[in-house]
Image (cartoon, rainbow, N blue to C red; front, side, top):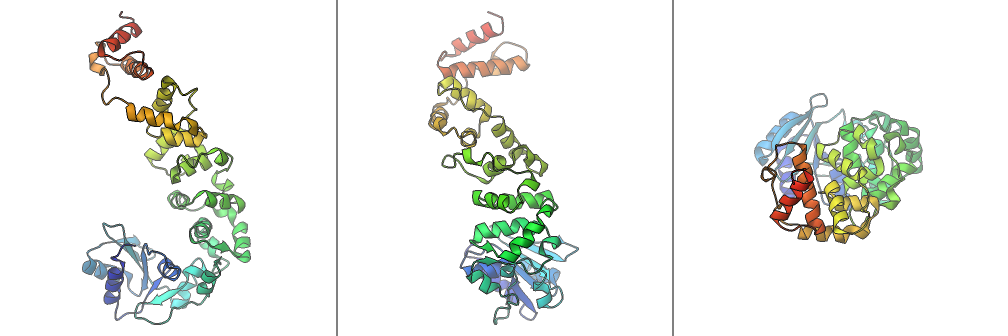
Length: 351
């Protein structure tokens, strides 16, 4: 989190100075690990009042996350956020409802020793991921994916009991809302996907590692490239964005250039841009990357002709002719407006 984080925490302490309130979850865990804080998670007696009072003092924007659970969030233009949730029973009872011991540690806002009933600090020291209870995955199956993310992100490893429990609940992995599943998958690197496969979590989601080995990771690597490689068309089962859907279609429909001639590189770019380099990485065809880069750098700023200059009625033929002109220009067979017009006349049967 940015340098404003201590100020935000200070405002939280000021707002809740006379109440029972705690910093919990990932913020405490990341403090112990010496990691940069991303968000703050506060439990208190009256989350609605606390969120609004904090927002008023800090200039953030408050809104309800869940009426059912009484959760509120205050956001800032910088991307930081502070969550407020009501204390569920006693603090011990509240911590007992959390997922892993490393996230079941509380820091009293008023000061004092950490509250760590499940020895999460020891598990952090020993780089171990351990479930708080046997119902952890039944209570929220998204924790199956979160477990793998915590392993990869924090350098932890499931302890034997937790791994056994996770494997026994692997069939639940597809139960959470698609938006939540996608959000977790987007945070995984290649090792995370390999771990999903090892734990029996990948196949139930429609994923496979069959194409992973061919991807040229030195050429391109991103969450969406990993998603397309691992899930292919199965990715459409999740609520992906329109842009990710177009990216998926471009990569799955791509074929490597037949050769590195300007014509073939142009055809490949026409089929895959603006993601031609990602498509080459996906296909394991990195040998054409430099040709694509050169074609991008030398591409003319303006076309030789525009559609309304062809002298024919609007329709599909206009687009076809413009594509042909652009390809011949890339191939070097034409270079002037007059040559483009002559090509259009021949191809349209007018010359």
